[in-house]
Image (tube, rainbow, N blue to C red; front, side):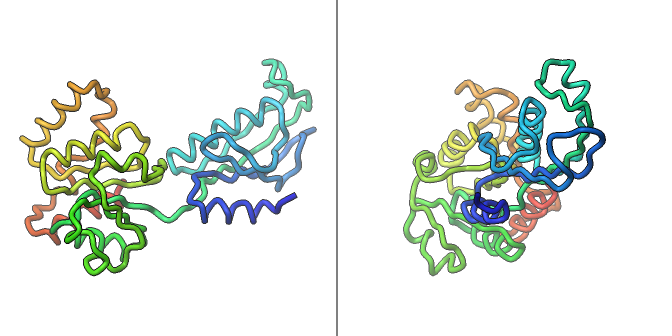
Length: 253
């Protein structure tokens, strides 16, 4: 059987969202002892076991919630009470679990390679983000402009769906050169569960784009996830100041 820590390392290298579940305390008769571990992926795939039966299914769902939120959780399960609810466990004991989302390098997808994108990618890289630039103009997407980046995607926003596998831990900043490209970028990313979506826009532009999205039948809850105008309100004016405001908001999320 593959070592659980080898599996964790492979998942981190693949940037696959997952969580580690550890049995940290037991009382009475339980199917696993303190220290037993299980790794849960966002799609429900598991490695290892913390006891099987319905209690494991419940913990898997709780682990998936933790992956989505990025928050740790500590929970007790009373196996006797759950047995009475027809969960399949007849041990009669209690188990306490610690659920910890696997820490992955934060990824920031920057739509646009212009004046704001340049300092934004530089500041984000300096604080540990892995940045991906999405830009359709060759002169704004070269490695000479973004020398630290391993991934520059030459594409229009609507073309990125087939090129990127987003995760709930990912951040998106939309700072393109036009209203239409901003709109297409939002349409592309809104269906995904993302940690942060920010749009550079005036209040008038924001209202126009939000009205367009509503006409496209995007739910109000989806639209309300958009941070716009992007960045904390610190009176930013220059590209560098705007980039600082954006990073401050991203760090705050």
